Image (cartoon, rainbow, N blue to C red; front, top):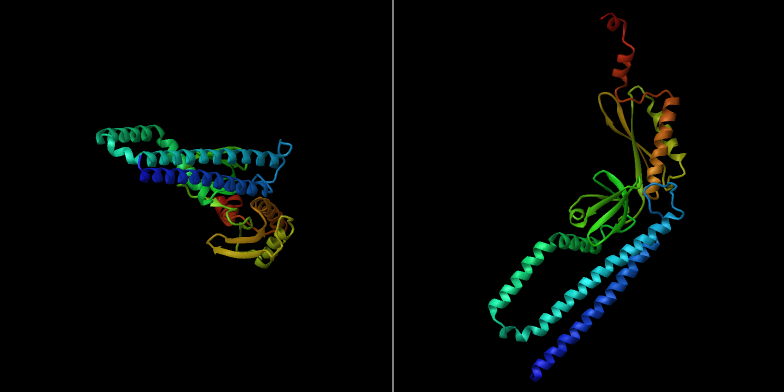
Length: 298
């Protein structure tokens, strides 16, 4: 072995050690950062409700931290393995020309085919899990709406994502499918939400009174964020009715869900007390239930 080969091997070994140390440092920093995000979570459900668990938030955080630790450990082991293989190839590179080319081609081709056929689903999900983690488009604790399913991200493993739905069912989606799906993330950048409620009134309604009843319904809820007055809009004037919207701020998706429920309840009660007709087909229903004299004769 000449001096050039000795220097080459020394450089490769030093680079390999530096790469392994870098993997460890990056792993520890990323894991610490993700655990800090989990520690800052204030809720683990999409709806504020009592649960059979004594301390549901603490249980959620413990499971989330365990899942994050396991996922990042797998990423670290895979990165270490790839670094080792790269180092091994680099060390053996000067001796490759001494091996038969046909043997090398057969060996590499066979390994690629066997690995591709046996591990394709796992590799697809694993790489998609890395992409989801690196892009930060989804984090544990995020509230999302996907395929009309409303829930909280409970875990993102190396192969699949678990979503705890509002009724405590679990929706499990492979990462390779998850990364290609469209979804709404209510807590990607912040947790505030401009919650709106849609309702209908008939054309003979007093719109000033409707507006007051709607705004009072929002003001009566303690889930409302008091940064501005509730906003009332007339969104559409169809043939049968007037479509109205009421919008107001909530501090989180959980409060927004509760706020909209309370607003709808107060609206129904308030509009009924005021005698305001709300059915979208009120006139046709009224004629069917109370036919005129001519209709009765027919």
